Length: 323
Ligand code: 8YV
Image (cartoon, rainbow, N blue to C red; front, top):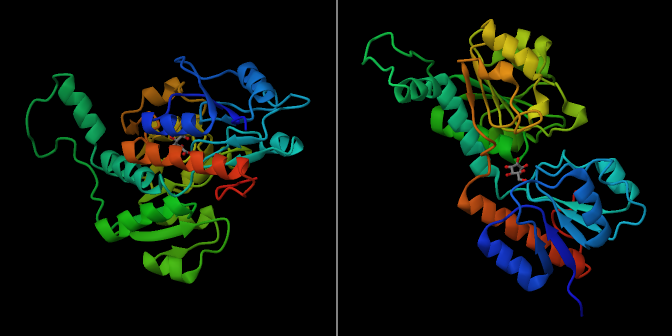
């Protein structure tokens, strides 16, 4: 029997590429650049499966194909706001993602960002590398204590819960949760967390707010000027979710005018382009979308895609089906 023809849009860990090639007729995009919408559209016409990443915008334009050959988009990543799910549904295509296996590593990066911004680690490293460190002094780069403070977790899925675990059990933080659905009491109890009904309730109570909700149109600019104005003036905002969840212009103003204490971002609206206003802000830590960037997570994500594809092509329902 002929193997299904699959397109991998970026290079993946070698062990995963090897397994993909064993099971499928695999084509790897060996170029440095992500595919553009036209290339994705062409791929949907000629492959049985396309395996996109966050850098592939599977937009209405890319999905403007009358008879796509592709029946499944097996996404490498948990977030899939780069895929136009309505147009995908019009074509009756399946979408899968890779949950669980990256939750701990992404929460580690969220915690890293939280600590870096609170303790001014980014500023310190920049100063030292620029040869501007003049030595220890009592008032030098004095930051904010983390232990025992209150953390607001926006979106209490797998990654949000891992963040709460680290913050509560590692740093004795109090956890306040906002989530679109009610979180079962036994889950909240693991972190001694309380759930509030709205972001308006959460924002003013927290010293740190960490975003773990999905991106996409529904959550675009969820954290806007109005929300930032509800934050304590010395509170910090952490984002490892998706860039569009924060209104970046509003954030740059809040940082410049110091109406909030600081922010730390792993994701950006329209990344890898960075809003130039953000680059001016000292009280901001920025990482280049490293949430899941460990050998372990990236391999596990790949093997999860292989499993999803194998199930699909062998007629079973893939475990990570999202549509
Ligand atoms: C991934 C992520 O590395 O899984 C996600 O949703 O944001 C990242 O950690 C990326 O999406 C790979 O496509």
